[in-house]
Length: 361
Image (cartoon, rainbow, N blue to C red; front, side, top):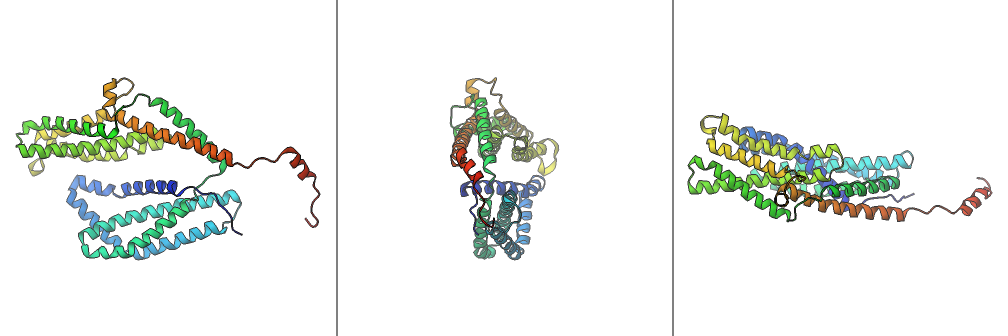
């Protein structure tokens, strides 16, 4: 007999799957960043292409197993073939949904590596004629299975109430925030920090063209660092657990370590790898200034500093996200309360209890 299971929206499932995919891509490409920081970008690209060549030979049997397993998961989830009571049934479907999302994320990482290989060997692009439809099937099945990652109604009601309360408390702590749009503050900070970095590097006797190219490089460096800082700060201000607040800083830390190699080359390296000392100090200035505008204490800062700092702009961004989170929690709480089955009235419960059993029961 077919059953109707509670599911969540495809949009919510896709958002969670995209987050899982991003995390896996960051973890997978950590060795690439390490090679780029120690041996250079060319060596990192060579390593990535070699990995893509290795994986391209495993695509056929790997994706065949993925599709087979996901189809089996889907059949088990909708076919009522899970042993146990209703709670065990729902728990098993949630576990299968999580595994499906991880498999889809791993598949996307595989596609990225194969794309790097095909970029170096254009004749291999034909593999995408087969790869794209199969990956589409895997993503589709993962989204369908991920929609079963739904907890019991009582748990969701409690979660919605807790999310509403937490968002309200977090919004109260973000009253001091920037009044300007985030992109405007981000562009202004990137330009100013790059200009200060260029001023610090002027004793290196740069030509006009070299100074312009160096300024553009400073702008790009500052913009990337500030974007990573802002995203992590946005996630930090909206997080509810210690694990999320700590792990959100992994990407900025890696980027700062990567940029920190440049001052290291100026201060401690010799020969062709050595950078001019003023250039090294200019990168130190870029790092210090980006950290300053990111971690500006809003409680003691002036209104102008809050308005034009990444800290204030990120607080504004986080406040917008928390407002949406609060509205969503309130709406979900009301919908769950309204959809709860009404308890039978007292007289009906008494009548049902006194009703004689049916013959043969």
